[in-house]
Length: 449
Image 1: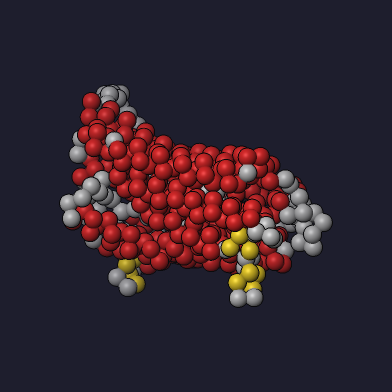
Image 2: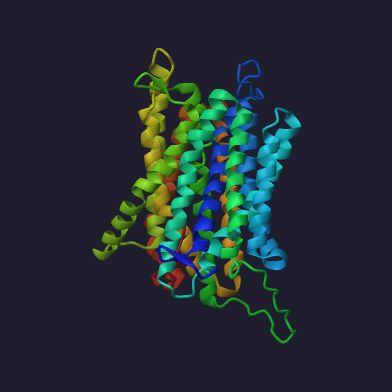
């Protein structure tokens, strides 16, 4: 039964597809309304917690950081005790519990719920992707298309969540929104439990063989040391990128609510709807951007991973130029609001930057990391992504005193300068990779973040 196929792929792939789709639905639904709920006034019909923006952005930063940081112990949990399959199941249950606790209109329920969600994502996220790869033999050409199918599920969930959870939470009741995200995760968990018969050969716990004492740790070679230097630099790039990109759920979310004219064709677009733009643009532009870089390389132009990440950082920075334009319009307009089209353009540039950084960085790490530290380095990638999310929270907090225009211009200048430095020194940095970047990249999932 586990070997049964559907459309040329193991049926287990589609079980994982729907499980991850609903997990991303729950995560991005939460992300869309998290800070809006914290800052909604207690006197409004749909009352929130009434927090000030600085405190809300601080908690948002901690929350989004810990979601990613907990992927490290989540991976260790699977490797050493449960196996990937049981870790994913545990993560799903924790997520369901967390969202349904959030459905209660109590302060204790809010804090308890987000702890369960952090633990749930940490157990599920790093392990379900590995299970997709485990469905295929090494070298199976269908593996590439399998991850593409899996990626579609991720972005369907990320696109639908802000529209459905966002509307229910922002327009009707915040806690109904949290509950709806939980219903989505429950559906994913039901599919996962039902589909265990198609996953019998993947994600099982395999006890690690103990070292007999004859094998000693091998120090890094000079080439590996050079590559580790570049690897650390790539981690810095990741922090810079996510520190800018993750303004979407924090500062940009609040800015869109308070200072953007969201009326289009007589309909006021809920703030949370804008959170769906990332996934929409990823689906729309993923193939064209990949095609562009392929054609660029065939023309013999510089196309190293570091070059792509540098260009991606610059493009992400220019997204903040559009946001600065919105801030200038806000200051000069009679109603104190700017056109929604500034947001459309900013999100577009951020996604173009993402498609040149996020998948490239993941692939780059698999090439540079010494084989004996490959898993550790991938865990470190998730950790530094979390650090970038926390940096995003700090930047959002700073905007509350310095002003949005100052922060938008500051992020613009920093990202463009940082990106230009990467491009300027790319040839010297490439030498430190000792040809690792010429290796064909492994399959990487592009996620809407």
